[in-house]
Length: 198
Length: 198
Image 1 (cartoon, each protein chain N blue to C red):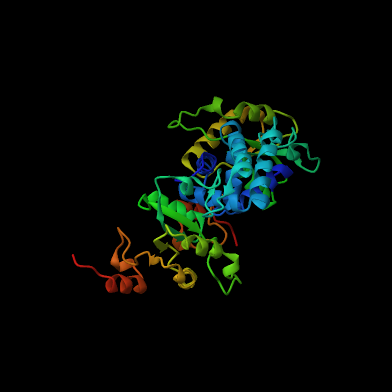
Image 2: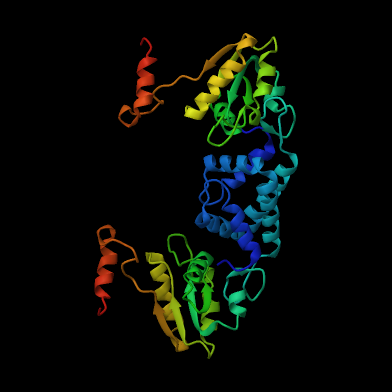
């Protein structure tokens, strides 16, 4: 196909990125080669730098260039709240919303019998330890609203029970901007059940 | 959003790739950081290597690590046929089809009055020169079936007229596997006009 092993290698690796298939990987590779100075070289540098500097926070599992991460180290964060998420991407999503003033804890996935992922494969022990600290008052379970996510939420509720913290979860309901007609039955039922006075 | 300037920089650059928006760039960056050894480092290396080694073929405009490119240098190629394409991606598409035994010529775009792209911005002069060589018998115009592509095809036909080569273009018609009901009127009209005995 593409002449030159270097180009083929680049395409094969690009195709492994989520969101890029073989076709878009080829387009991306061509774009990179076309914009060598503006895109290819800076991206190669950015990747090498990220590979060298980015590490996992030993407290919460966030990725950052410092350990503890900027969130764990921030004096402006409410250290009485720990928000438990599945992946770093979920943490970023919550940070973009700008309403989480507390700390995070990244599990690194969910329990999954099908994929053979048990509690030892997730960072649960670290969470239990953190929730036992006297300053922690609330653990917010912000797992995805999937079967695996909710199974994990129940498991974590059991594990932190003895720590005498309030365990909460995100509300289920109609997404802001969502239309009822397009919502699934489960969401509608949850939204109706959790209705509030207007 | 993402803590760490290195991560933000990586996301910003990834988002410039075709097919990746800000959201998928974040997912790709996370994937890269998660698979540092298997993906991030090899990709950084592949990019650095491509930046260093990949060059444009001075004859046809293809990208390769050698000049002339592997296609131009191949003794098995039919040097009497030059297939003119807009971009390197089109050349790759034709190579994948495996039916082009001739050489290529990459214009680097199309004429476009709207975008201010004239003949001097494309590699037309090189094509005219090549088509004057005695061994060249046919120039196949394989531009996209867009207005700009067809304008460019007409322009090139005029330019290579004196070279006494046969100028052909790709057939228009029903795509293989295509259903008539979903085809536009222009394609149907072209397919009907160019009908052949069965």
